[in-house]
Length: 408
Image (tube, rainbow, N blue to C red):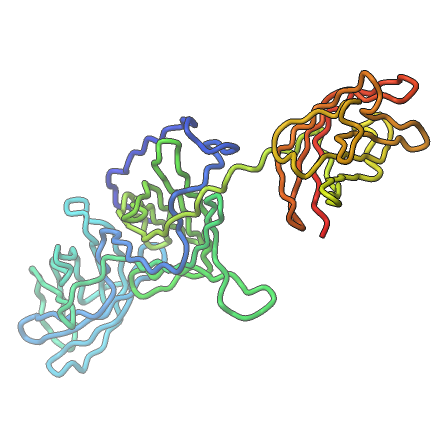
């Protein structure tokens, strides 16, 4: 395992909770941004690949060699040489990091024991060649020459070696900011998860990755993200601030081939969900719904059968009467208003008991009409507060909000 060290980005996130919507705190506030959808990212690990085909010139003939990565910091491959390129030879060697340049360095030879050709060099800054020194002994490529010196082993074709890994994954962010692996588009009852992949140097594809992470927006409006894409033997961690321009992540990459820290990567983001409205206030404890209002000859009569006992001590059938001309506002139901063509009355008959009302002195119930619509299906809301009496003088105090629907 080899590593490239860079400076990591430091983040400071406020934990204040002032100004958050009702019912939310810093731990549950919905993030302003979302990491959702397919991603195809180039991660510049800072080390050029040594895999590929190379050509070299030894003076009396030219040759070529192809290199590939092997486990545990080794490389292998094969080459050809000789006047007509008719001599084939295998190569084996190792690679690591050159401490002076921070670039990939290689050592390889055409045999494990008693090699007739060996090379040691470093990848150039432009990633076009390996530059170093060679030695050759009699027998290499059918010659009897002994020689050594500097040698440039150039890439064929002359293109820069890759210095990036390619990370692909599909992410889905939940309402509260949790990021996970998205499912594929396969049509089934439960589509499989879309596996993440990491294409590393040498064309090796690491697969089977899963996505996990979180985006958070603090009270001061700053958003940060943490994301990990992990497979068997490999991992990419992403951490950094998030804004409209993207998720500005500092990546830490670990594979069997290479470890790179402090790699800058930007992921596109989407706008996060809007904050939900605060929940509606709970219904008042004294609310009595399910009542029906009927209008006959300018008289409004509101009835509610079998009202719960919490409103009138026992289960009861309620009746409220007042003229349709009353409208919104406050009126009183008293013995003085209990008679006439359009009386104002409030009374209820307890189940198996007595009838309490406002026709008996000194009864007095204030009727506060808060909603008033006489259209069929409309609503009338009456808040009744005061004292009711039976004809023999028993009293029950009432405090009830009656919600009635106007019958057609």
